[in-house]
Length: 330
Image (cartoon, rainbow, N blue to C red; front, side, top):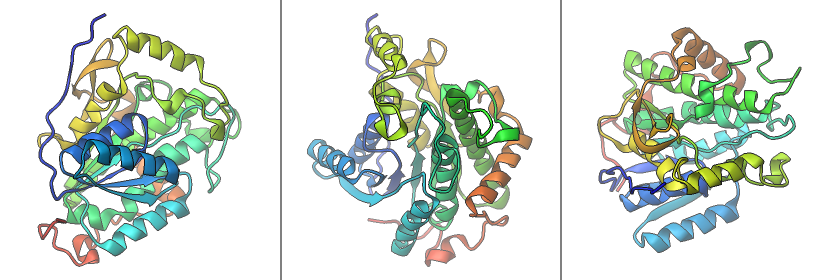
């Protein structure tokens, strides 16, 4: 099937600080390149410093004037999340865009984070939830857009409320679905609470559809020594034009993170059952529509991470000595 070129416009991001997790390869690296090309002051928190350096070098080769800053961050460690956030809070510069893109998918056997949580829930959701909570003063100061990457897997299975950590019976894909449902519910609740409390933050969701990335490739660090059968099938579907590519799969998040019109909405590919094609606004999956579930995930996130959100928005910009509409980073 012939593949037509698709793209989305990206506004000028000069002087805007953008924090992107998972930006050292795959869809995240595509996002990093596009954001840097638009002039963003790009912050890449990475777990693997070597991969981060290689990504930054490649971005600068494509975009000679790119501003890319690397920080260490392991989303599977709440201590690492706190340390990264503390570094940015010390700098005190408002954040204009936060893209929660990093993730891990389907380790063959149950694994846990440094804090003892099931790896996918802990990395994909709890690490990002703690990051948002810690960075609230900077997000409020920048009147930020927070975009969280969910998955088509969030349209399947459910949150395993009775065994949230999958200790009794581990299902790799079920746990992955749960983590992405939690990401989606939390993201939509963030937008609702921001509107109620006047935090000035807009929260959007995106999903990449289906595309060949490293999520399903060989990942010895999570117990997958070789590439999965699924990634081989996805590569064939991508070559046929049915599934997407990393370049097209990045577009929903790019649109959700940068479009002036996006806010509290859900974006994904619009073709072949929403697995590929141009990005478009979509109705959130049924599993993401329950306000009660969203509130429950919010409360659990605060409890499990130990990082609460202030009900009234807290001191916001004042906490970092900035006015919410004051000077932005140059």
